[in-house]
Image 1 (cartoon, rainbow, N blue to C red):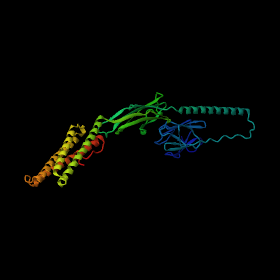
Image 2 (tube, rainbow, N blue to C red):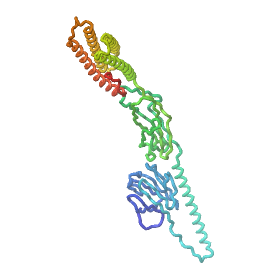
Image 3 (tube, rainbow, N blue to C red):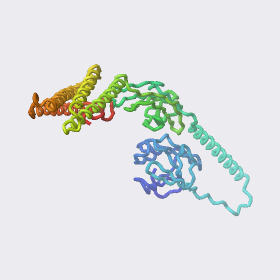
Length: 424
């Protein structure tokens, strides 16, 4: 097949591992590809095993693509069939070939013969008739090849799953992805190339056909193949899925959109509602904490009378007791049970601080109004203040533990940000 000096149609390798090699098109059918059984074997990973072929009929050379993966390019255009002309360039993978079509020199004609003999005229007529027969046969063959490779029938594709309107529930922890299995079936009269899966009009995945490609020989004239993929998300909302199928010729067919919905489960909804309610209670507790701290500071520096301070300490205690009762009536989701217990502990220590503050304010007022019965003795006052400080420190420690536990569960279970700071 290889040669150096010859006349006739040939392919000259311009780029690639075989650059400079010349191949003579000296037979009616020449196959080109990566496999060893081809007439022209190209060691090119982007060339298909059976990439294309050249059909020779007389002085005509027709190149036909054999459903190659990367296509047959002639002069920059992808073709399925093409009648080669002199100096056409073929791009197969990373290999470039130049087509040269040269006709051998014609036999000389005697200029001296003014009239051909009768016998010579008959042979000329027979030659012309034979040439016409050959040309007609070539036309028939070319039409047969072209018609065989003509394919305008679109592939068909259908979605098996998910079903239209299917609902998917997201459980705790909501950060876990939900896997949505996608199953579909596609078919074509001559062979498939690939299918593309789109989610909300964005290409999600491309699946190449393996069993239903055109070069695969099957008993049935219709080639079918099933495809599957898995799409994942952890975001609630509506999603649109559609599939597009491509056959060997580039014809396309696609499904209508399948609408699916991701939503939080009842347990997630209940946990979100619980956290919203607990956030309001934490904010309420912070209000009481500020009122207590402000009153205690004013009473210590003498800017607020002790009876008024004692009254406020008592009101704050009652408000905190009411808050604790409401908290204890709540049934937390299992993931937040420890958080609720830590918050309850914080409130309980704050109530003890309220009671110590009332005792302190009452003692300080008694020393002012009845010095005879309550001599000025700082030891009792210091005892009550130590109790206030101790219970306040225990309140803050429980609040820090609560905030860390609560925010961890909010983040890991519900994927939401931190709640209000009970020590704020």
